[in-house]
Length: 124
Image 1 (cartoon, rainbow, N blue to C red):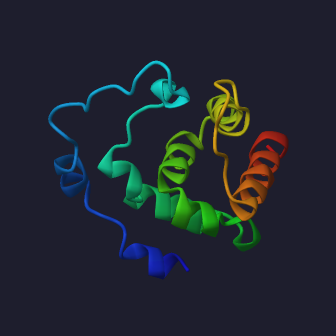
Image 2: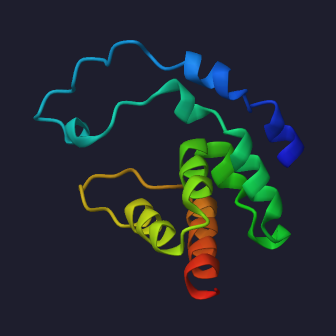
Image 3: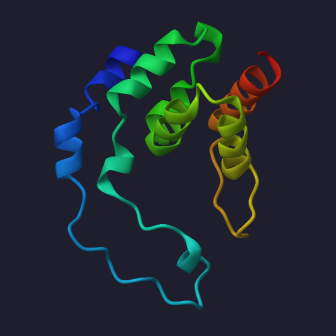
């Protein structure tokens, strides 16, 4: 599975080149999406460090659905993984809907995130 995802990885310079030069117009304040960050192209691409992070996880914990469907989530987890307190806050941000109206994750990805949270936040 991770080899399949390698085709989605881009070198850092190439990822940085995808950053738009100007932000898009904000959504109207009447929509719940006005609180949502605008999607960036690099959020759809797995960072090389994210694949390295996923490979070091026990095989039964590898978040394959999250890597494939939500690369920005996997990138965020991988980035802060070495800091348990930061990772706990990241999991809270990912799993607790404080804004209201979030679409949520697929069942498989949600289950992966819950398993990873338990592994990282309760086993140290």
